[in-house]
Amino acid sequence: MLEEFKKFALRGNVVDLAVGVIIGAAFGAIVTSLVQDVIMPVIGAVTGGLDFSNYYLALSSKVTPGLAYADAKKLGAVVGYGQFLTLAVNFAIVAFVLFMVIRAVNKLKTREEAKPEPVAEVPADVRILAEIRDILAARPKV
Image (cartoon, rainbow, N blue to C red; front, side, top):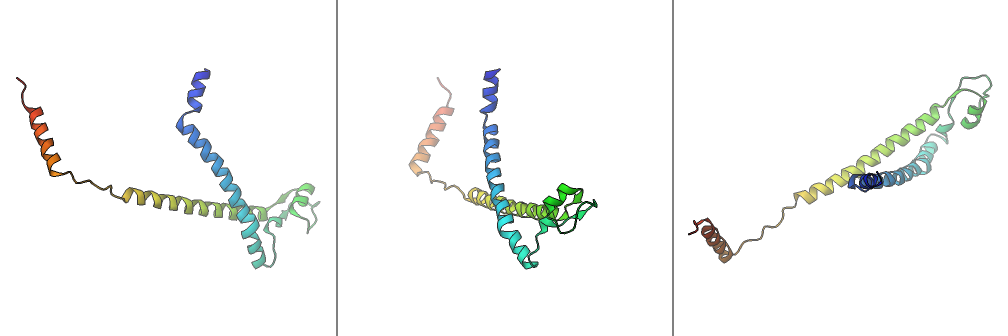
């Protein structure tokens, strides 16, 4: 059973998948930082300093208006539509950045595939010798 597990774990696909997951997690952290630390503050500044993550609709009478979303959640039921908007924008940006990366990789692949391999011209004497070899090989043996 240990040998079978070793074969499974060391297959190329499993290792490739593990590398992809690790790189994806790192890429996700970079994009999350881009959204939270760069894009959302700009959007907040454009909209007059609004922080979307603190927009919510209180469903409980215990929640007083003006509290931060995290504090309001502790007091009672709230619908955090601001948090949802923030995450939706985050997803849209992650999807767009991922699309751009995949698009760039696909362009590089098509350029590599489009390059025709140089065909070396076979010298005439080599071509004639190959023809002679083929004729001799096709001749019945005595």
